Image (cartoon, rainbow, N blue to C red; front, side, top):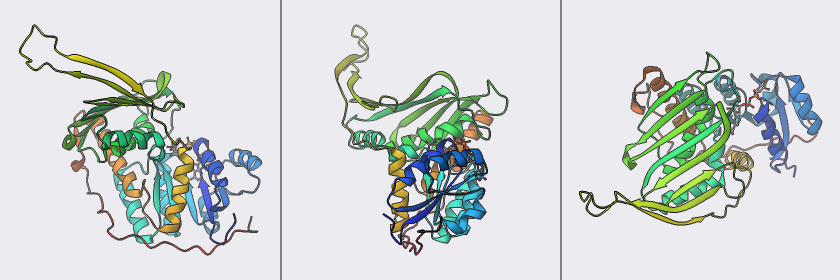
Length: 366
Ligand SMILES: NC(=O)c1ccc[n+]([C@@H]2O[C@H](COP(=O)([O-])OP(=O)(O)OC[C@H]3O[C@@H](n4cnc5c(N)ncnc54)[C@H](O)[C@@H]3O)[C@@H](O)[C@H]2O)c1
């Protein structure tokens, strides 16, 4: 479909992840034109071979007059200036995770987008993943009983990033998944991380997030320096336990009817300290669709309707605040309360944003 209201979407940063956005956006009916933006001509040219209808520019300022919206898939430290420039030009913006590298930058983005009346969304791809939806419903419907704790592992050999450590690179996924599954944000955090194979950025980290209102703690292990690729989230409940393994494509979620029960009289040392229950393992059906496709379609939907996206700027800010608190905790070797961060989060908007009309047709503008 090429309608008069179809959108021209720029992808800023056409590397590993940006090229996936290009593929997805090219396939969506709502997009009239995908515009590639990257100074690396080798990358742009290789994408243009696969998508000859795309236009390309070496930098964002040149591309801005030719787009209605942009996806920013550049290194994390470049997100804020690029997104602010796009917002200032009245463009809708989807920023890859993490939204920004400081909470103050993330607040600035949220405020700028609100002021300009444009959609700001963050690429927390896992929140658009059917397996995470299932995990959330297992927890929210109390199928697992009381949640005792959540444990995640995101490990592999690489890919080392040049501008951020492993926490800013990988933990946004785990933090956003855990916040989504529990339906809230942590009150305080504790972090340990270390540099091994390089002296600039921590490549292994163990993180703890505390949700005292729910009496839940979450443990996150992220590493660029592990021989095995692992993408796993385990939720341990009083009735059942669930494991989400993103690498197990046919059974991403498994629910274990397993648990332990203490004896009635825990002073009676003639009895075993626990009795164990070993029941069935079930694999719930998931209507799985590529999460990036779902996410990018929802971005276009929010632009059209003015509806607040699931992974809104505020949602991105909440994750960046946790990242910043983890960074302080790691540096100072102590737990850090989110309330210690300099400024409070902006209040949630009470009114629905007015949908922004698009008059542009890009037919013939390539
Ligand atoms: N949501 C996910 O699951 C997911 C997965 C991987 C990466 N990411 C995110 O995507 C972003 C990009 O990561 P990547 O692995 O693709 O990096 P990459 O290094 O492969 O690609 C980055 C590209 O950005 C370009 N670039 C840098 N500065 C630019 C600028 N000012 N204007 C235009 N282009 C510029 C570079 O030339 C490069 O081609 C990061 O924020 C990363 O965290 C998200």
